[in-house]
Length: 176
Ligand SMILES: C[C@@]1(CC(=O)O)C2=NC(=C\c3[nH]c(c(CCC(=O)O)c3CC(=O)O)Cc3[nH]c(c(CC(=O)O)c3CCC(=O)O)/C=C3\N/C(=C\2)[C@@H](CCC(=O)O)[C@]3(C)CC(=O)O)/[C@H]1CCC(=O)O
Ligand SMILES: NC(=O)c1ccc[n+]([C@@H]2O[C@H](COP(=O)([O-])OP(=O)(O)OC[C@H]3O[C@@H](n4cnc5c(N)ncnc54)[C@H](O)[C@@H]3O)[C@@H](O)[C@H]2O)c1
Image (cartoon, rainbow, N blue to C red; front, top):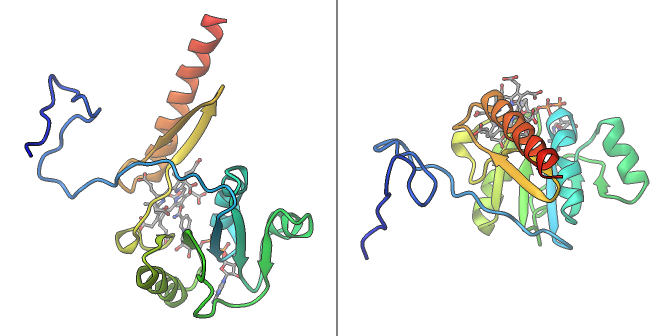
């Protein structure tokens, strides 16, 4: 079947074409309620991402010898499970989504290899080119969610997210 054509500068699929570049990720919305998500590593990057997984209702398991105070508190409050040890093969059993976010590249590589074997999508914090998923910059205004990927330019993604959230909030206030 032919691909549907874009009409005008912004196609009906919402993209301004950058023909010839590497394929862009397929943006989607994971519905994680009650589903196991394994986060390997419990430092700065994991601590930025885990709250959103919990908000989405995921059953989060953090595997790391040491974690941030926020993750330790969330574990104590039963908001997540913390396995206080290094990653071991088999830890991804039953996972729907995986984050490899340690500061040890061989461990991140082992996590992403196990995820690949199990065909589970996996973010890899240190090597986006070897990951099967990327984390967008996100925001929300009155039930409208915004997610921005900027082609491995996280600061640009966060800047555009802030702009969009600002515009949405202004539109909301004007409509009220
Ligand atoms: C948007 C955001 C969402 C979030 O994380 O929640 C996000 N990174 C954020 C922050 C941030 N990232 C980095 C720093 C420290 C340096 C700096 O300041 O520049 C900081 C700031 C900080 O940590 O404070 C460095 C970095 N990032 C990546 C690599 C590896 C690589 O590119 O290979 C390295 C080098 C690591 C190294 O040195 O080894 C990779 C990715 N980072 C992504 C997302 C994915 C898609 C991005 C896109 O398409 O635009 C992608 C591709 C994959 C992924 O990781 O999912 C969040 C802003 C959230 C917000 O502000 O709300
Ligand atoms: N993608 C991004 O947005 C982004 C941003 C900053 C840094 N990074 C990259 O991500 C990596 C992690 O960054 P960070 O700032 O969160 O590091 P961090 O030092 O704050 O945390 C590292 C965590 O990994 C854990 N860990 C180490 N070895 C482990 C093992 N074998 N098994 C399980 N857990 C293990 C530690 O206990 C700790 O919890 C960095 O090395 C950097 O390459 C990515």
